Length: 145
Image (cartoon, rainbow, N blue to C red; front, top):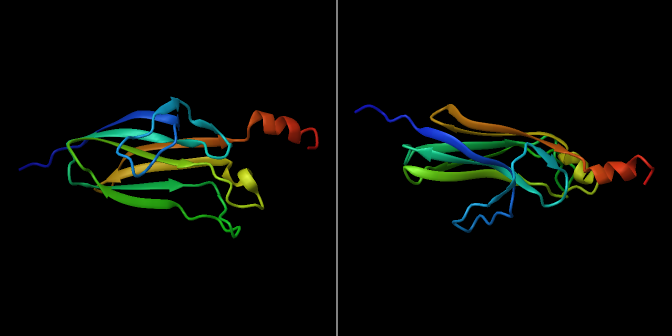
């Protein structure tokens, strides 16, 4: 029997409502964008709909642009895997801006975040998000505050 080819569609991306990983509900998109303001607790990422792939292993990765942990060390990319639960399944991959390092604060979050998913060694979906300083923050920094 021939293997079925999964059908993948990115259904939304950008800034989302807070995500509770214990809930079955996925977060709701608030704004479609790939430019993310560097404000603490901003949730961003993308949602995919995967069809015809039940039981296959989905691997995902989030590559940070040099985000620092509490000890001031650069975080490794966040990798994980999960099995596709049904033949019409929605999956959210995202992250949150957090103030983890008192040394650089939110500045270590600035730059391009790369998120991708793969099944059977093939990238099925990927998005880049650019985290930028808030305009209000830049306004005051330029004035010496």
